[in-house]
Length: 438
Image (cartoon, rainbow, N blue to C red; front, side, top):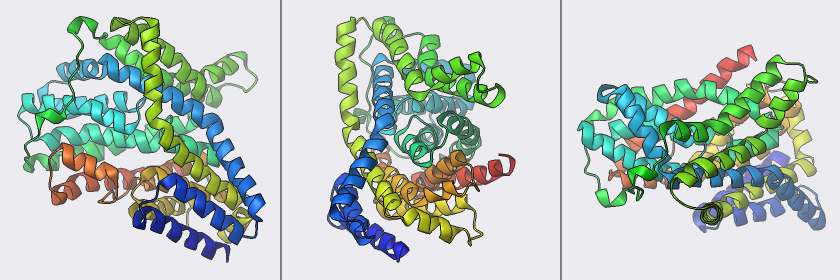
């Protein structure tokens, strides 16, 4: 009976979002109310459960996402992305331009949210295509694949960060394992698959591409640009290594854990960006702080959607559904990683939104962590990978890619949809491989 109620809840979610075009946050709250009452909770208890889920989800997430938005905004407005791409292009040469694009995508994509990063790399893609005379998709796919992987796999991006909280996973270890998966995934989905796109030619509207208004003297150096962009990754990775190789009570390990905490690492990176990238552009501290506030505004709805996913998860826990699923899974031989990936993939195909799919799947699969049969960090990555699969016409990312690169729907399916699916499948395969050794 509980699984049937969850199924009806997911169907209701699909109808509300796809059929009635309801806002995802409102739809998640309504479905959480319906599922809670149907599971036997009183209306008052259901509301309390929803409030608890929203509060626990936003507790750490609001800090991480707020600081992440500030960091991404500072990198975007300083011209650091263009500086990084130019230096990498010069280093790799035009013959190896796809590798320059991959690295640019990683460096820009790790600290910046997907939509912001996508808009930031557009002028880079266009300039490189114009200079190399190569088809736009051949240049675009390596860098867009990098952005997609960082968005789906790596903290501090919204969905992976929230799922880490759901599963009780370690943020630093998730980042470390995610980076290990990201490299082969991007090579296959971006570089190898990207080479098949040389046969697709399209004219791009130059008016759609943003250009930096900063003078060359106002642009930051390559070193400071890379340093600021990778500061949170470096600090979290060092914290993860300290956790793996140093005793828990060791003083050095305690320091590394403090600096490697996602909130602290992002806070350090934000101030590094303010006093390097921000000051270089010629603005004073007050002007930079005014801009920082503006960078946080666009993430408000994302936070609410994540909070809605947290409410749904908490209702499933408080209603006893978690215990029911745990007992049910004891007799199932299918890998928990495959199960989490499959649920997220089905929701992604049906809902379109990777974030909503990942959050909903995590709420359903969260009891798997209690079984102790799977690494929670790998479960985070498998859920994130599933949420990226088979992006098509109900996904805003599909239309963003189509319109900016002036593609037909058929060309978008052949490029964007296939690329996203490769990222998803390779991500799952990597999780299964790592599960053998972890």
